[in-house]
Length: 461
Length: 66
Image 1 (cartoon, chains in turn brown, green):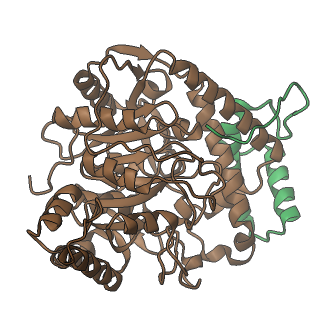
Image 2: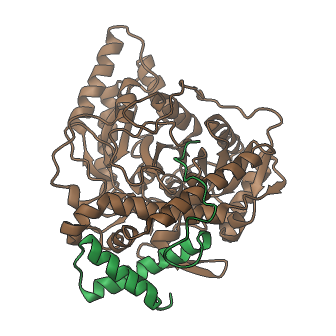
Image 3: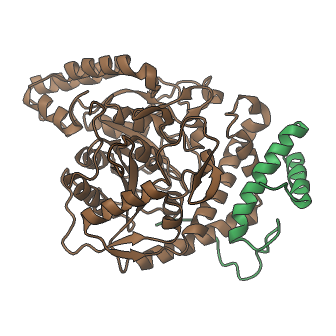
């Protein structure tokens, strides 16, 4: 589908094109291209037809249209969609009954006028960073089909990067929005923990799970984020905060203090990732370096919490249906279910200490900058990768730069940079702010976008 | 990764039994390797040993809220 979400909505609002026509074009693009990418695990074109027709009917009656009227979008297949079985990437869930209703965020997108066209591939149970799913196939990176799309929201990032839809929804427990956004070259927002409701989403790690949008432009990302905000008592972690709209043109306030994260974030960034950060820093006018000294322990805490909570969540099915689980992650899940309670408690204490250190850092800086992934997307099938002389397992370790941030719940926008001229592969930068300051993350990304540094390069170029 | 120490092998086997898992020796070996990896990362934030001492000035384990 050509055009940003806001451009599509504007054209529909003006009568230049109908929502039904936009849907037909979107469907044609998906049917032509998804066979080679494997982004979608289900399409919802009948529902989409009803939603698009309803938008056209509202316009014909002279009603004012909502901000995302007629905009096609898709969701990671852990979001409940009425009438569709919620897979969460797992064969073991394939026999479950279809969801009776929509997830809260799907309902919010419907209210904003968006048109749902399908559910997207992911790592099983969101436990992985590559979107190589043994049962549903790997989602390929649209920039290079031999490479992973990243995960776990790989379908969400690849669908936007390939231009199948302008906006998608994903989830991020340890980096699952930011890693695929980095590898596929799109914008992704992981809001503050508790900002957006997770009700109607298949859980992974309750105390770490976040949900958020991915998009091809900052304006689309910001407007989608605004549409998704709102209280929801069905998610115990959802903050009782009023909607704080960012608007489509978030601006960075004059005098914004930006720190470039060193230490852990420098150590685990390879040459391309370091160049991406340098490019972003130059565009933002950032020169000051700083350090989150507890990054390593926050990452370790995230690892322990993820193993313990994720393992406990799936323990019953692991006992009886182990063979149906993803071979690449099932033994990690079982191992996680054996973690002693004392480790989990200590990890939560470490997490709190890291959070307090971050708050102290935000006394000196408003925005922090770091790479989102250690390097470009690895090749499909890579068992390990090496960064700065250290070789680590791919599936468990690609989130080494994202985990410390989600562990302490900070809002982050991943912005796509292109550090090497002539190499059609992106590496993302993380723009990190204090809790509840998603506006600053998005404003920083908008600066990079306007400077031409961060952009989802057209696949035709 | 190096071979897991005997203490971890013993712990994993006992914990699997306790929780009711029934796996082949090959699977137990793989799960032990995975647990060893978790332990090696956890060790960086924990007192040494599988059973971390929580009585030494632990403070409360907070429910996380930003």
